[in-house]
Length: 318
Length: 318
Image (cartoon, rainbow over all chains, first blue to last red):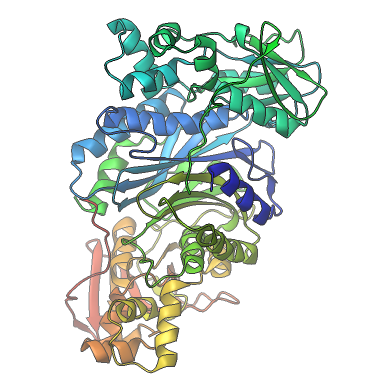
């Protein structure tokens, strides 16, 4: 049973009741009210999302909050609070817990977010579940992934692929790569920067549809396409490559644009905007277009259809 | 490192920033605003909080939401939404996940709560992290555990001890006990009923301090005492015994009032109220009194001090 199939099964059962504007199925849930409250939860598990051999506790703390702030950003919400559920293997050193919270608190401080509660418990492995709570600006609606319109440009807020390249480097340390590039891609993987300011600005500017690039540009763009009921054409030659992506792709013998489009965990925002939209302080790099047509993703390179060997990540839970 | 010590270490680090009225340290966090948003998170882990051999998946789902709704109730908030982080061992049957969500959704429906989002991931063992989001009634402040005053009565909203007795029965199936009592205490342990309506009524009535009885009446009353900076005297002879508690205590050879005061997971509310307060629709059973004095708990039976052999639960994570 894939994670996607499970989520579909759960979605079918969970009724949306009064007080909730948007339930399961987007980057985050949205409550009724103005300013609207936005809620996201992601759980990171040892040996599924990180390895203790390659990720420092500080990095695990940072990233576990970052992926949740990214979900808030994908709706256009400003972070307010986070709750932390921590499962700790027996015998874990207090210094590990300290460092983990240090990483989380450092990122929280950057965005004025309060670690406001949570739970700690024994567990067989390190589990970090974070719930992030955000607020929209008054009068501004959360940006769902379903609002793209034919004629919109598909844009990203920055280069992609470096995080996926970093994962390859961590898993295959023998890949030949200069140390500065190695450091850059590993940092992109371990300490992603959520695009909070960009998300807030894009919501205020009236972006049509938005989600964050967590599982890979291609698979996430296909989700925007399906939710919006239109065709998204991803133009591989326009995908901006993060630093080191070309070099890691060459070492792996794979096309760099494909690595960038499928690597995952970039945490840039993917956004559908009307052509010509400018948003002060926010990079908007066109990587494709939205068209009327059967819902789904078409991948092209210079106008020629491309079949990707893999689309991205869908953590299997079955 | 005990859970309590860890939480203290974390509390010391986490800054409370604008937008948050109450951070770590109570049953739930409270955001600024009116009506105020209330946030709770509890994580249940296989073989720490439940065993798959004795708890059905439906029960695990029910209880994982119930303990969080109980935290909202302890502030006086009405449930609005819940987010669910689910860690699933490989090979788990889809029917298990279905039943788990069924239990959760059944309780959510009772209180008009929406399961609005979350995350599923692979994990070594079953992990259920639930975040519950509630709202206070307009103009009503969340009831903290720190507001008790000398002269207040300490009350519970119902009998205690049945859940702890149920755990003894599940862990020691050979305990001699009639089947109806066995079923009653096991049900109290596996499917607790959060006192949501009582919590809302108590907040509206102006209760001084409140928390839920999750780790045991004695240890939770001591937390209220310490947070409020006064002495709480727990009068064991007044503690109302849940059904089956006397019989399980007899089978264990322990005083029933002690079993009831230390069993844990009752999820009744413990509340400090001015003497004479009546709250329509809410049982208020006096079990003790609040006095000026060094902060802490004094346990008495008919006026004679009693030293409890254990206070309750504090899940060790070190």
